[in-house]
Length: 279
Length: 279
Image (cartoon, rainbow over all chains, first blue to last red; front, side, top):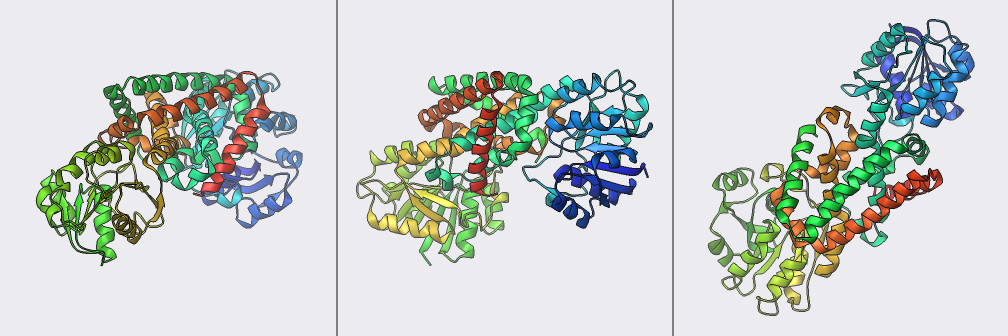
């Protein structure tokens, strides 16, 4: 048992999976859900992801750990709103896909040593909602933690134990490195998938087989979640996009010049990396 | 029973699946495999994809249907090499991912009415080899047929029945329309997946989660198969690439200008198309 009371703010796919994983692994005695939508909170309780629901302030006041699983443009404000009323030994963490803006906003307003530790579990899906939550969602996945010089060492240790106890492996990065890496590994692929899907004429939809479906799957993600991610990480996404455009121009040049050995080289190099990732 | 003797040239994932599907559905009395590699032909026989193997000329001479499942840069030459020795009523088809060059090369050398009907079953995979073959690979998938004015009407009817009997739905297109459509629905996604995979630094590989893996999955495809596809369809792929680059530049412009409603619009439009495709 890590915490007596765990509060989860935002009980969707990620928040719900945290609740189910914590329950399955006996990490908390009591799990409280916080959200705007009573129907979804009811559903989360029925599925066993939370024990009960409360207003944010009330649930934060009695928690040993509060984890924020709301869209990235809500997290910093929500953390600030409860930072003054939490128990002195409570820790705060989040599951946001961007870290720079959130961590910077909190650095400016939380007293040091801060008991908030930014986190990003790399376990998303294009699916949405607690109905898709799964107790093993974090199993063997990576969670990036982004502590700063102001972060309390005890809070970092506690938050690290929490994400590990949920099943994930933990890697520490600066918020800036996280955002640069995720721009390339997640946000850029999302943008490209969106562009490809948007180019498909209706008459050709039935010609979109497994390859197209795989390549564009993430484009089914919820814009309510993704638009704020792009807003917060737009500088790094723009850099990654510039890099991709240069690569595509190179490839187009090889096609134009009929330099087939260059095409073969790109394909061979891409295959080597993709094979290394596994299925 | 559609054919007494079916000859499959190239018994890999696609050729092997044709054999298994034909066997399962009782489409041919005798299935002959043709290939360069005796070990692979043995494996195809062990798996039940073919009954026996022979040299191309011998196997073509006695076949009622010959289907070519070799890389796209081999197909036209192989068809030409057997066209003169096949039975008068035999039909020829293929499974190549490009159609324009193959059909044009054959139009110039086969006597009309031609008994070759170009085909492309949209049922690929990044996997390779007869070990991954499956009798239901074509089930509910589309197969594009690309007859021309010179195609024999009986041959078209017979080849269409064949692909339908394997489980697929058939759509007729001109070779040029096929190549333009597939440039967008298959070849461009492959190139983009290759570019994204090639951009991933080794240190960030563990940060490549489901989204990156889905988006780049096709990059694991075999360059030996894909390089000739890009060579044969390079004009249409280049056009599709130009179109994608324009779209990505637009998106980069929106990020630079922090025009978040435009980003939201792209994401919403992409999601609408991707949702329409289903999983």
